Length: 81
Ligand SMILES: [Zn+2]
Image (cartoon, rainbow, N blue to C red; front, side):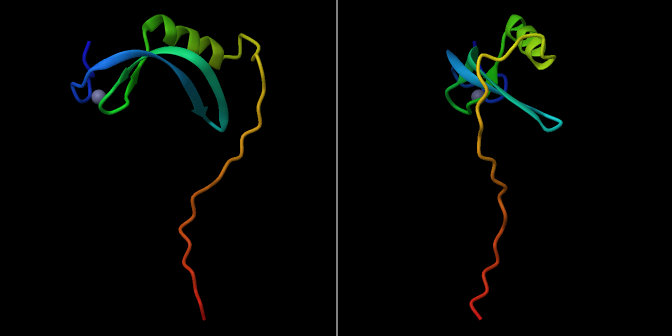
């Protein structure tokens, strides 16, 4: 299988899926994905995608809840006067 974006080689890996929609965040660990070694693009199988959608609908309980620090990148203009 080849990456649909860059044509690079893809390999099967377990990745952490980050769901980010409408200020709703969660991580899904150990998700099987095909990852492009060249551009890093992740592709999920239809079965995995279905499961991720189920998780997004909160049909299952999370195994753990973690707190993560959230930063916002701000362009600082420093004034020394
Ligand atoms: Zn690629």
